Length: 292
Image (cartoon, rainbow, N blue to C red; front, side):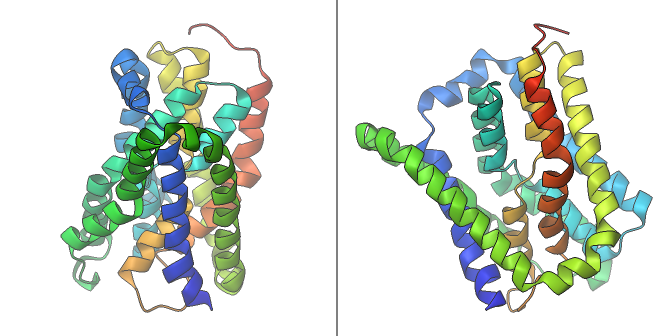
């Protein structure tokens, strides 16, 4: 049953959530990149460069094993999850910026994830690394992320009146499905998660906290508004753990339980909810500042 969750239901949940994200997008959302280049570029720098660098530093600081190190780098390579869009909307921050950043990085991870994965395998595992086909990984990433997003955008373009009605409902259904599958995968592999929680928890907490702080500080120092800075912070600090588990499953497709590559992504969600979600709840209640 565990293998069904990891190899079938989890990838399906990722595809559904990405399709739902695509349904909520319009061409105008992508045009905002040119209209707000500063905020987008800060978010891009944080996601593409800052995140892997911090993850790399934490791996060496905590002395992680080779497979766990690769798992952490996989998590760092994943784009922000849909939860960042939800928190941003509830907090009344820059929803359009949040959705655009999530969508763009979900599309570009077709390129970035295979590169970071290949680098991490060679850096941390060397000759003991399992053979991976970068082109096959890129194709799998396209099928998991870019393809359903583009399909969602296409469906919205062709049937916008209908999509406007069903998109909010489908979004809620997809999130429930997503949560159920993640919860099921963790519960069915609870012994594995429990054995690694204390070992990985502190490192993942440092990654979450450092990314949250540096995300908001870098945005403010570069002249973004308060709402933009908070939005960039959550986009920087939130990773798509489900996608991380799905990518890890590609490395060991015949495994019946969460592998060492997948455990960081599985534990990450618990750490983020327990520590960073209260932080963003606090930030949501603070009065906004116009500029820093």
